[in-house]
Length: 561
Image (cartoon, rainbow, N blue to C red; front, side):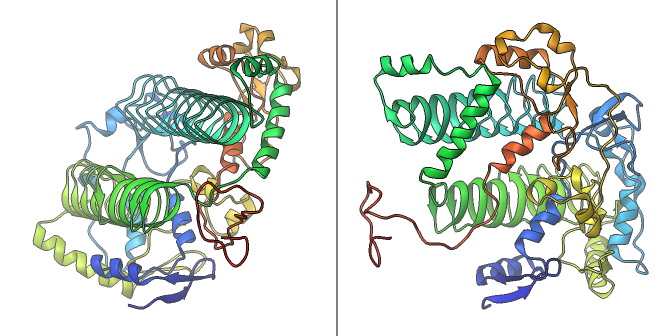
């Protein structure tokens, strides 16, 4: 089919459906979308909670647990041991299909009865206060991560050790407040770096070591404010740099922000890509609007996707997945998953389902099933009954679509409405990528959870904290510190926080001052430093009269490429 311009049913902006999109929709037999790519992503992210945790009791064993669902949700919440036990079964909640009600109304009813898993934590040791992580040890307030050890307050980290307050780090260790780095060690306040050692306040460095306040480095060493020095002179100057002082750190951060405004920025960060458009991705072929992923082919409108093929509109997927569409969280040999949430591993042929696991296949409208097949609304059928009823339901979804409270229509082919999400908007990842105030969220009819009043009383203000880490005594571990934002921000501020023992040891070893913001506010501060999930058409600013080009390329009409 030819290119088509449509008006988004949600934001009313125009968006384009490309011929390649139509090829995929025809391949999996779904209608073209009615929401634009950004609104589709926002809608899916509203169904994922990475970092909002609560203390509550398991609905089955009654033990005190940490969960991503508050005690106020309508459905039961089970700890991991209970959810994976034989003490219950998802089929006992099955309901027959009622053609006098819309499909999503019936799915909503099922959502209020079926137990949910408290946390997405698998094969971890001493990682109680984490979510969406696997194969990790001794991690605290870490989310969306795997294969890590001794890490704290970090998000989307992989194969790393001893990280604190980091975002998107891979195969790194002993790093602090760093963003989008891989194969690095001893990084402090550095961004977009690879294969480096001992960098402080550096940006876009590759294969470099022992540098301070520098950018656009390649195989460099002993650079101080982007000036090449001898090793002796560099060490002499670095003796005057004291990162243990909070006032000094604030001064250096201001200088670093000025450096970012002046240095050269590559139009897109990618490696080994063919016929692909996106940012922060590698080893990709025929991918479009592809962000923060790798090892993909024929994938479009994806975020945090690795090892995927022929998949569109996916966020948070990995490990050999194919032919998936409009899915939030999937992977590990997932095949032909549509309009679903948290369906893995080895799941296939599943639509409109949530938290269905472990080899489940041929499900429609199911919740919390394991190793099950040919089920609709958690009710078991034989294969022939299932396939016949499934086709009837699809036609029924078009004949009797669900209409949300903002009069947005949901026929077959639309992902779940955000208003049905088990999470409030400000509990979900959507709040990070598409931040809204409480008033804006309510206006859009998204759920909003008011922050609970703290049950603790702060014992020390940030102004009273020692400026230098060398002046911090062990009794700081007993203090409750007021967050400098004091809840006057839109960053899910907890208003107060504590320092834990391993964290204090890290600051002392790395010569870093105590933080003044709570972990949530620090996370959002890092998030705001990242580029948005968006691309623009613009003019390259390369000018051979101003910048020395290391590689020949065409300039037109005069001076610019």
